[in-house]
Amino acid sequence: IRMLLNPELEEEVIVRPDGMISTALGQNIPALDITPAKLESDLEYIYSDDLSDPRISVIVRSFAPTRIFVLGEVEEPGEYISVGKGLSLLQAISRAGGLKNSAMKDQIIIVRKDKDDNSVTYAADYNAATSGMDPMADVRLAPYDVVFVPRTAVAKVYAQYEQYVKQFINPSLGFGVSYNINPDNN
Image (cartoon, rainbow, N blue to C red; front, side, top):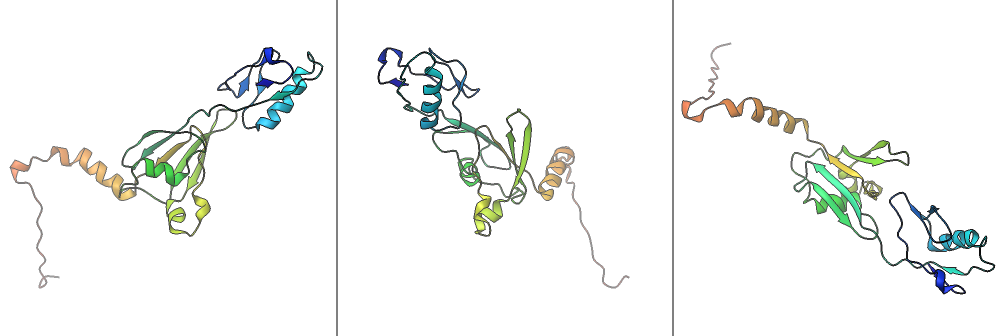
């Protein structure tokens, strides 16, 4: 925060996780999701109680990285960090190594916290975004969004087979299944 007529009041502040800043002359000033020009105007109004002609300039020095999380049927689930404009759905999936063959591409879920910290879910369609049918399906993710790629029904059945059946079959016992089709017998 630069002060043209009062350089002794210049400060470098960080926007807190709650979206507020505090300065020598003002506490808990909203700074999230507003332009530097709007913040300048707000600060000039607040500072006018103590200064006769506050002339303020707000300069953004750096941006905090944004974090999103991708999990489910992707090659490399995890937390992904970017600086600047947030990632889109396709960019996040790309960072996560792409989708597995077992991914349910048309029912991807995005979980986002609202202003009251409640979880809100949104459905996303990877096929629509990548096929060109609906380019708007490649939505921009917000900080701390969770992208969940569910398994297809076939993949769920196979996972249960591996968990409950396959692990108990001893290959050295020669267990197998065979069948014979006899066309002469009805």
